[in-house]
Length: 340
Image 1 (tube, rainbow, N blue to C red):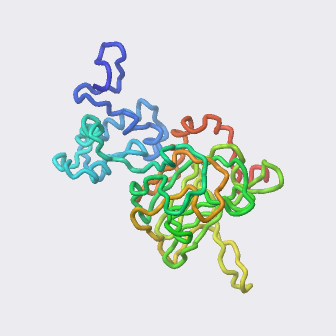
Image 2: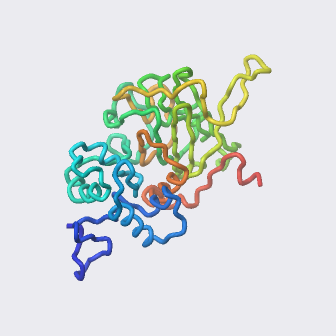
Image 3: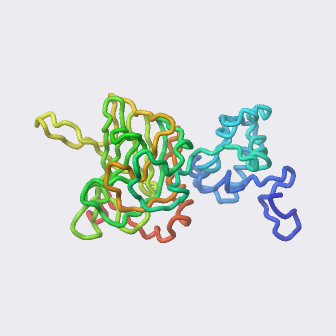
């Protein structure tokens, strides 16, 4: 039973005693995410809960058009991944009731992401991994051309060369993706292999100087949520729920052998490479110096491009779990607040 019955100590409004399920369980519903996903800005939490009940339990909607109440679970995914639920006809209300009453206990999958742990830990320091050593359970990651990868990072120091944070690929040049802290900074290099450019990479820079306050995009010893949203020809990067300005280096048409910066992270002449199943996911890789940073809550959302609003909501939701003091963190990208 989900809790105490009406009138008894411990009773909560969320208990639905006709079906003995809690339709507002945090597994399936978070008001912050729900409001962000559907662009709702003028309702209280009580009103959001009411809307969730009406749009899922009191509607005739069917999968794949069920509303989604949390980043980590989708009724549409639950239907797609469990063929034995065909008896529901895809009814959103039946799917939700079944999951909360039976599916969750039976271990049925309706998740939208895989949390990638290092040796079973969700928070850990980045370390160079031996070649072909699986520390994350690589068979649980099903690769896709389009995906979102989110994680929290805290840099302890900079490294005198480009240093690897994570790398999804079986060889040094197979990067789907690979992320690096650039030489002597916390600036990011994002590599996303393309069918015509295996080493296609994009950059995110911030101000740098000789003091700890200006080592790049990220200040040292503070947590930041990073979101990489990859599409068929490139990617976007978000930091603390805000979309960043990336650039690529392209050949300078006026100066042979030189490059110039081109805004964006897009390769219109190619396609993002999809790695094979059971590809190694390193944190960090065997070929580079490891970045001096810690990671937490690394999540891979297959075939799902999270929006800026959704990433901002997830940052708020995960904030207390990762680092309550992150509220005081400052993100320095160009232009910096110091430039104003």
